[in-house]
Length: 101
Image (tube, rainbow, N blue to C red; front, side, top):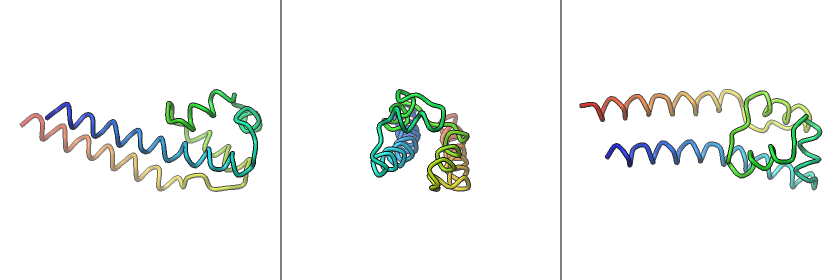
């Protein structure tokens, strides 16, 4: 049971990353520019943009803000991101407490 709960949490975290990555990719494709060009405007490499788009890594808030400012678009609302993080934290706590009983 513990393994399946950890798996569910992992899927939830990956889904959060993939939503952000999908938004980044969608914006980049809408602008019709390469990952390298997109990244260069915000001081990142094309590899970094690729890792965000594919969900390999999650961009820090600073990067999301840089993308939003540079490309004049709200990529993800900060309050939404905070709510997701708080929800995941609460879910972890509840699940960990239920496992120990």
